[in-house]
Amino acid sequence: MKETKHAASPEARAALAEVLSAFESFKAANDARLSAIETKRADVILEEKVGRIDEAVSRAQERLDRIMADLRRPALAGEAPAAHVDERKAAFDRYVKTGETPAALLEAKGLSEGVATAGGYVAPPEL
Image (cartoon, rainbow, N blue to C red; front, side):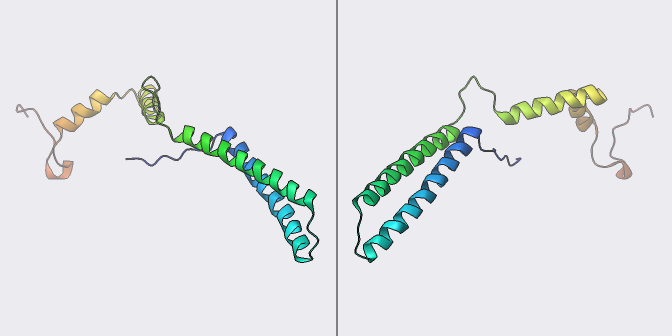
């Protein structure tokens, strides 16, 4: 079985970038708030700013979670999985390039037994 890796969609990348940038601004504002508390100069405006940024981080994280849940959701019955599409494309390309069909390959496998050096190929009885 072939391992498949899915690239993140542009929407998921944008949501992740939004979460990361909101978190960076939250860290900066929270560090400023903590240093103000340490010097005993707590600022109400700074507290509100940290609260707003915290809400923005939460909303962005929820959006990212929804997008990731949508990406993990199995495909509907009408949609062809990407693996099947790749197999079909590979079979068509092989047919166009060499003229080989999967049925011909299966016939050849059925007629041969073993390896050529051990005399494993089927030959007509007239030979």
